[in-house]
Length: 299
Image 1 (tube, one colour):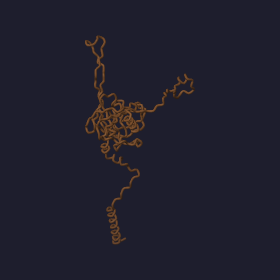
Image 2 (cartoon, helix red, strand yellow):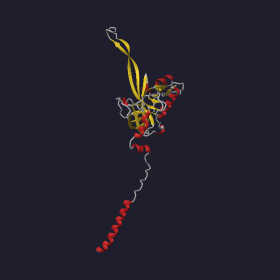
Image 3 (cartoon, one colour):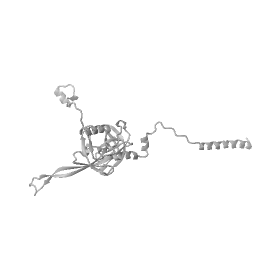
Image 4 (tube, rainbow, N blue to C red):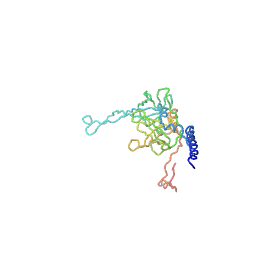
């Protein structure tokens, strides 16, 4: 191909490529295809933070302070007491406690843990806006570690309950409470396990386990999802040192709501009973009764 023919061929091709490049640049980008595994709204929002969930739940969480008068013996040594025998005289000591609670009705009903208010002579509640009120105990159930308080305040912000059947292992949760009395604090974690039992804290156990930090003072506070709905009532932490190490327990809604309703209506939890008692069948007992089997239950 001579030079003149090459020029005649080259320039039209170059012009065509340039026009194609310009057309690609000017064309509007296509909308990205929706992924079949697209995130739910709450999960998408979680990428940006949990401020909306906290704003929904925080006004419903309260700080609880308790006072208890404890009579302790005070020993008198000579010359006020008898020589060789110290005489005890009663002395009053003030024991102070703290915890958290969750507003469940706008007319002043608050749910918390039994162990937070157990044997307290006086119970004080501080609301999210700083107002303080004395509280009375409506009812308390040691078997589930649930108690209900009442304060004389109207138009409160009750928390919304999440569907207990929708809670899954791996869900993001937020623990809200009053750790060490420093004020309302929010920590974040996931649901680590469901239906946890055998912890030997209460008679009836089916805990939500979480790694959201739960410390002294968080008891009775809220465990919420990323929409600010109540998932459980923070109850205990598992630790050999007394400090949080990634294992906390919350009482799920299916237990707390049932107990809450009974305590409000009856002041106590009424449970069914069979009217029988049982003992484990052991080898010595089986031999004594002449049983061939050595395992079972004696009624």
